[in-house]
Amino acid sequence: MNSDDFEKRLERQAIRPIPGEWRREILQNANGASASPTNIQNSKFKTFVSELLWPCPEAWAGLAAVWLAILTVNFFTADRSPVIAQKASPNSPETLMALRQQEWIFAELNEPPEAPVAERPKPQQPRPHSERREEFLAA
Image (cartoon, rainbow, N blue to C red):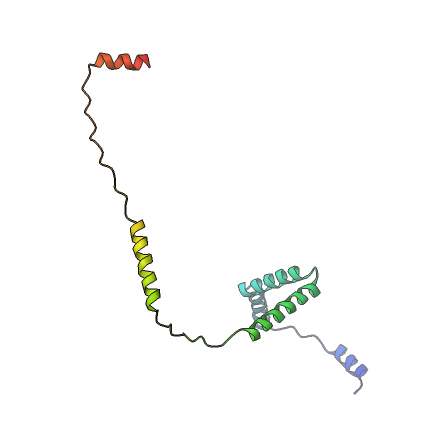
C-alpha cells in the first residue's frame, strides 16, 4: 500500500464525533492537571532558574565546576587520622612548688584592702525655718 493510497482512503472516511462522556473526562483531566499547585510551583521554579541563569549560562556552569573541584580537593585532602590522647607527664616537685608560690602570691594580692574606720557623721542641730529660707534666698 502506497502512502498516497492511504491518504486518499483517509480522506474518504467520515469523521466520527468523540463520545460526550470521553470528551468531558478528557477536559476535566486536562484542566485539573494544568491548575494543580505542584505544576504551578514547578513552572515558577523553572522560570526562576532559567531567568537566573539566562544572562550567561556558561559562566554559571564554570562556577559550579570550580566549586565542585574545590569540594573534591577538600574532601580528599582532609586529615582523617584518629586523635589519640597523650598521657601527661607528672609534674616535677619544682613545678609544684612554683605553682604553690604563685597561688600564695595571687591570694595575697587579691585580699581586700583594710578599710579605714570612718567617723560617724555628726548630727546637725535643727534650725528655725526662717534661717533656712534666708540661706536659699541668699544663694
